[in-house]
Length: 396
Image (cartoon, rainbow, N blue to C red; front, side, top):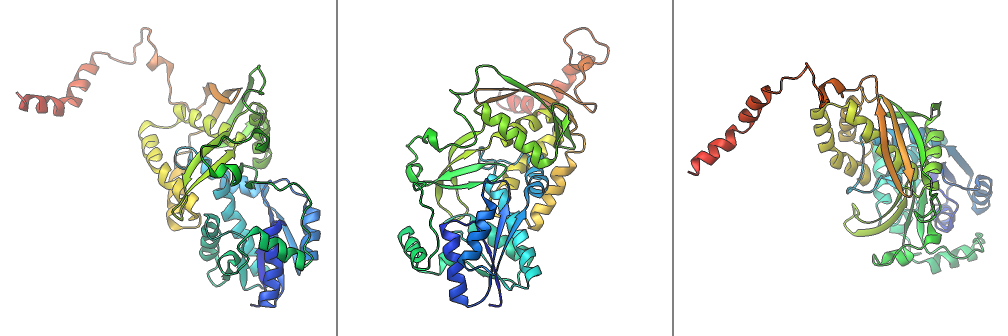
């Protein structure tokens, strides 16, 4: 190897990997950290990376790009995996892989590395990203080739090489955080019968502790993207952060599920996605007055496949390009405002309006009208019943 770029978080795993790569391959290692909205002490991460042996530590602020080019496109499509998961981790991986490849090309590196284990989805997502963007880069996945296969061995290696280990109470959970969500796995959650501990949650209060008074907000959309809250125009990252705060304060966005990993096993995960939950509810509600019925049917039929593509790591695939263009075409008329009631874990649409609304009160009214001839319905019903009528006659 000439030079390696490592996806680096500053935690135990990637700190050990950083030193291991340098010793194993006898070449410079660039530590790359992606800021996608997680709460970190970036100065400390930079210092630790340099102290652990990195030639350089690159910290990229990707928050706006992450929300604008990854989260919003997925929510324009109402992406949801297995009916529940809003793809918080899945959506962050392609932008991290893309930036890592960019840095490798800029720094003259010929290899990239990551800290994902051989059991999970992230190894697939990162490496499909690398291969889809620059297949000439060599991929190094330490967890699949080294013998440091336990926390005890990692700690021993860190102590031997003088790598600082935080002196804090061990967190029993494996977690991933970004502007869209935070996830929790492992610990007591490995038994799907165990209820998550309340102290685990970071972004939201429990429904029991949420305010007794509802919060009302109005969200404005343009071509399927949220652009303002209560009349205030906000950047993508700022808007999602605002929704996270509003949702978290009202106990919105918690999810406990067992999902099917791409690698074949089932996995129990607990998620907090307060802003994303509000966003998806509001977006779908606005579509009820702006999206044509048959277009909605076709688009909805594609959501499971689209979501699976993201979950499995094929963001940079040709099928993703095709589906994204289809999803975005459906959003041309999704413009307007939705009023929402946030209350004790619930996000309830209570009003919607649009200058391009397909809902016309003059047609839908139960009062007298002159735009719809009710007698026409008889022929419509008989024609639609013709095949059932023939079937019934054949049974006589």
